[in-house]
Amino acid sequence: MSVTDAVATGVPFSTLADTVLERLTATYAPAADPERAAPMRAYMKDVAPFLGLATPVRRALSRTVVAGLPRPDERDCTAIALRCWRLPEREYHYFAVDYLRRHARVCSSGFLPVARHLIATTSWWDTVDLLAAHVVGALVAADPALKADMDTWIVDDDLWIARTALLHQLRYKERTDTERLFTYCLRQSGHSDFFVRKAIGWCLREYAKTDPEAVRAFLARERGRFAPLSVREALKNIGA
Image (tube, rainbow, N blue to C red; front, side, top):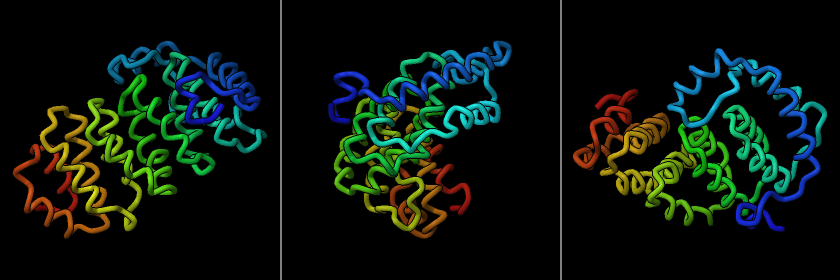
């Protein structure tokens, strides 16, 4: 089974994934804190149930889960991520995101459909944004042919897929494809959803740390096409 077929045909076999999931569920579940779980779920707008693990606790537990385990390959990453996503509690999704961030370099362009599945399933900013900047961004940087996929994602009906296209260059700095960044912002300038408008401002604000004059000039030309939220976010650190 190829990685690109994994989403369609099921989780690929991985001995490492078996070990990780066995350790993960045995470590996370006993540490659950129901009193914390309820407000965490409410804060995340009921996107998923929570175990109630505070971030420092969760990350410490995660370190014990992966201690002594070998470096994964792409198949392992696919299996671990998809199996974590099948578990209801959000902390398991966070584990998968952190694992992928750590091992994104072992994944080829064939992992993009898996990333898309994760982004489009149980979607909220807490997982989508990290996958966009650290996983999808890394895949596109390693294989520029994937820019064509981003060109498709930016006009996707799923707002989280479009948001990912906007944010995938967030960590590129001097490597940013400026023309593509500005084009994507214009493509979604009329979007009615808060999360897309916020993402436009965020990606422009981040690029302004590298080239503030380019962002100023772009908004001087196109400001009228954007929601006030997007403009406000974009200019937050550089002024009008």
